[in-house]
Amino acid sequence: MDIELDPPHGITGFSLGIPAAQVIDAATRLGEVTIQDEGSADMFRYMKVLAVHPQFEIVFHLEDGKTLTSAEVWTPRPGPEKITVRFGDRDVFRTPARQLLDALAAEGRTVLRETDYAYVPRLSLGFTRTAGHEVPLDEDGEPLYFQAVMVGPTDYYDYKLAGS
Image 1 (cartoon, rainbow, N blue to C red):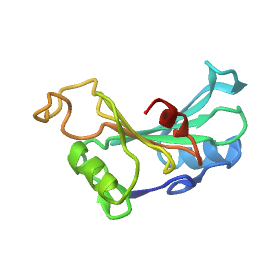
Image 2: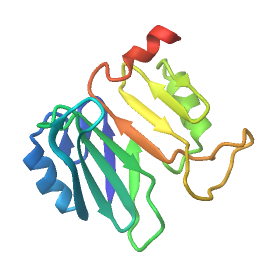
Image 3: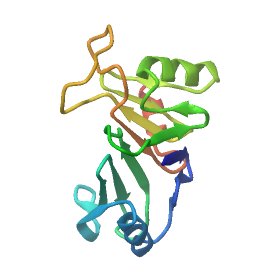
Image 4: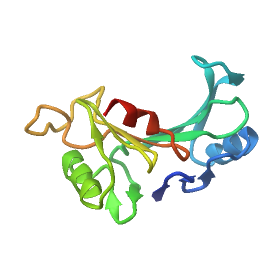
């Protein structure tokens, strides 16, 4: 299974802006679904749909309580199915994190790096290296590979540019 990241439009099978019912229906085809704060648009407790596949998880964020506003894909786990999460020709979770960011920067993209997080404003991608389990570490002491990636709409991470 390939999951293609297509910022700022969404991910394979999930276009940003689709209605909640469509998100839930499509997510059930991926695995077990949990809905949190259904219909809520509260800043701190907005609607989320979690799809748990035996080898990966995707959190669908519906910040307005009605439509898909971003999708967060977590690193695939080993198992019988080959699961690849791609941005263009790059495997997001099998390319070392720093190498992936360097390649994006070499393309002329603005890459903002923090200890555990990285953001690509104007492209609307956000990455985390934070892991809740043991993973291979890079020479900087952080996980070698990204653990999750978020695809948001146009300008989703542009607020980060003000602080850079």
